[in-house]
Length: 251
Image 1 (cartoon, rainbow, N blue to C red):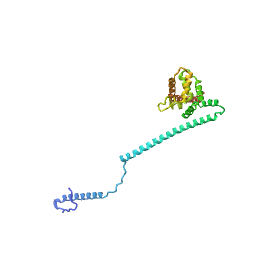
Image 2 (tube, rainbow, N blue to C red):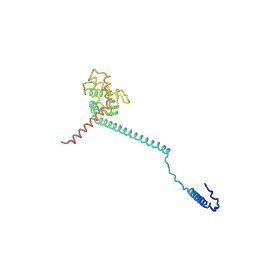
Image 3 (tube, helix red, strand yellow):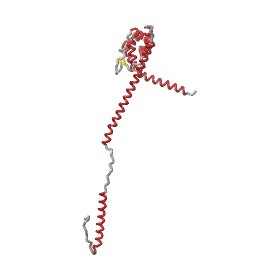
Image 4 (cartoon, rainbow, N blue to C red):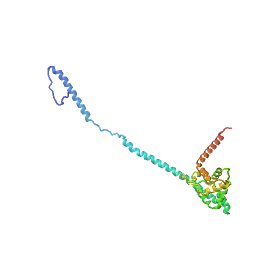
């Protein structure tokens, strides 16, 4: 039962005195309670706003993170491309230096010595060397000299004859850039004068072989260049391991 605050009461007399005292005490307690509640409501300090990370903020940060990852990938790929270009340029410079050295050491005393020395460029190690050497084979005397050189290599089967000739002409590292007819985004080998020299030397050594047979063997040699590189690498590692074991073995 709520008692109005401003209402006054007259204290009864007699037997109602005790009840009156209890009622007055109840009214006083209720008024004191109302006063405390009013004080609490009056005090309302300013609240501090604490920033909260929402899903929207997280979503806004995620595209930025992804952009940074993509940018790093692009930079890494560009560095790899630059490294590959630098390695290619180094090989090209080495090839040019090699060709220049051959030119400088060629005596000017006669054509015979010049024809002999152009074979010193073998085996060819880069595409540039192949192009330069192939252009030199337009000279009939040099082409004939190369055919005779390849013929003297020998071999007891057609495949061995062709493989040994190709090994004399090209390194495995440059062979992987070529295929027989230029398939799989590689350069065609059978269009070069080098192939004509291999064909002529092989048919001179093994008269019954056909051109199709020589083409297939040349294409097989080029297609297996990568596996020969891996085999050579394993052999080199095995020899190095043997050498290390011998060095550290106790007598």
